[in-house]
Structure formats: C-alpha cells, structure tokens
Image 1 (cartoon, protein in one colour):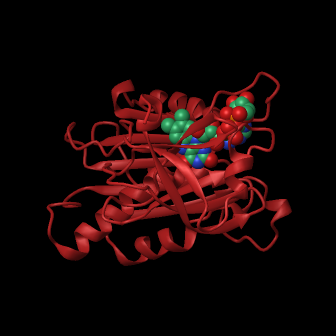
Image 2: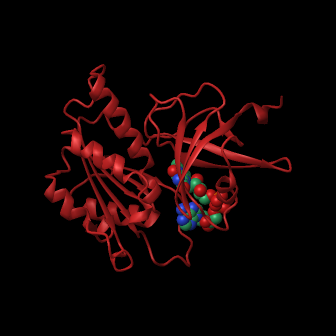
Length: 263
Ligand SMILES: Cc1cc2nc3c(=O)[nH]c(=O)nc-3n(C[C@H](O)[C@H](O)[C@H](O)COP(=O)(O)OP(=O)(O)OC[C@H]3O[C@@H](n4cnc5c(N)ncnc54)[C@H](O)[C@@H]3O)c2cc1C
C-alpha cells in the first residue's frame, strides 16, 4: 500500500436524504476507527482513473454516533460534488483517516454564550454541537451543557434548504439551553413561509439584542458563505466583539463575478 493510499479509508455510503435538487445529507461509514470533536471536518474524496479529488466537509453527526453525517451542496461545475451527488447506498468513497479543524466549542475563554450563525450547509458543525450537548444533557454523564447556552440563526434563500430545521426546532422546544431561528431571504418565492425573513447577517443585531448577548460573555461562530461571514464580522466588531471572540469557517472563496452575497 502506498503512503498516499494509507491516508484514506474506503468509506461507504450508508444512506442519503435528498433535501432539494442541490442539497443532500449523506450518512457514511468511515471505513475504520474515526475520532473527531463536534465542529471538526472530514476530508471526503472520489478516485477516478487513478486521480483522487477531495474536499473538506463539516461533520454534522455527533462523536457519539457510529456513522458520519454530512450536509452537502451541489456545485454544478465543481470537481467533486457532482460525483458525490451520484453516490447510491452501498457505494464507496474516500475518507481521510484524520478529522481536522478548530471550529469547536469555545470552552476556554470563560464565555458561556455561543452565537451560531450559518448559511444553509454551514449549519452542519452546529448540528454536531447540539446533538452532542443534547446527549450529554439527557444522560447527565458530562458537565455539559452546564451554564452554556447556544443561540443559532440560520439563513437560506428558501425554506426547503434548511435540512435540519425540524430537528433543531425540537431541541429548542425541549431544552432551556438552545434557541434556533431560521430565516429566508426570498420570501416572495416562498409564500407559505411564515417564519423570519431577511438575511442572517442583516438580522444579527436584532437577535443579539433580543437574546441579550454581550461581547464580554459571548463567542460568535460564523459558518458557510464567505460574504455572510465578512458582513457578520463587521457588524459584530462594531458592536464590540473582539477578533478572538469570533470563530469562522468559510466554505469557499467568492469569485469576483459573484456579486450577490449570502442568503
Ligand atoms: C472547512 C470546510 C468545511 C466545509 N464543509 C462543507 C459542508 O459541510 N458542506 C458543503 O457543501 N461544503 C462544504 N465545504 C466546501 C467543500 O469543501 C467544497 O469546496 C464544495 O463542496 C465544492 O466542491 P467541488 O469540488 O464540487 O467544487 P470546486 O471545484 O471546489 O469549486 C468550483 C467553484 O465553485 C466555488 N464554490 C465552492 N463551493 C461553493 C458553494 N457552496 N457555492 C457556490 N460556489 C462554490 C469554488 O470557489 C470554485 O470557484 C467546506 C469547506 C471547508 C474549507
């Protein structure tokens, strides 16, 4: 086995849930022992004609689960996602043996409030946080969540893009430590939607105020569309957040022609 091969497991697709034409949730058996912390990402890939193409994907599952779960958006002309979208149950893919990333819950600064802001698939690491804390809370086997509270705002263009809304609303209804608001930026194309409207970054001040979040006690986590992250950092900085209290996970770089911005 070459050194190159040695970095990967042959992972297997256990199940997929298609959320829309260009969004799906993949449940994957990693193909060997796999350790990670909530908020980290895995590197998935496909081999074609001896060439491996791989990309980073935030892990939506909790380390307590056996399978890895991913929320993936199709980039029609992308190198990898068109192949990922063709995978059927039982098909194999590559998974690097090591999880990576520092987008994990801040348990070091002393902040007990955690403001989670995402666009569409950027909810994945937050699902992992909440599933993990929920399990700890239910079993009582860990001091978490303790005094920690999570406040999550998720933006999308349309309501069909949320993927985890039912699950997150269930946690929010059941626990005293989690709040969740989903917002859509194109309500005129989604006339049955009666929830929050506007871009997540545009609603940031409204919700930091409504939830009583202060820079001295709150770490912000920004995940997904790079423009949403940039706007949100500016808004939070002007409201007093220091750079070290804002963690970010940008999923890609914006091409110059993409003028529009985040959902
Ligand atoms: C730490 C990390 C975690 C990530 N987690 C996720 C995740 O949970 N789910 C997920 O779907 N993606 C995630 N991504 C993005 C992912 O790694 C790939 O970049 C993405 O799936 C596109 O891969 P591709 O090979 O199909 O397209 P590429 O060939 O890599 O990209 C083609 C072009 O599309 C642009 N592009 C890439 N992604 C998007 C997008 N979503 N919307 C618009 N343009 C885009 C690229 O900048 C490039 O110009 C993550 C990225 C990072 C760095």
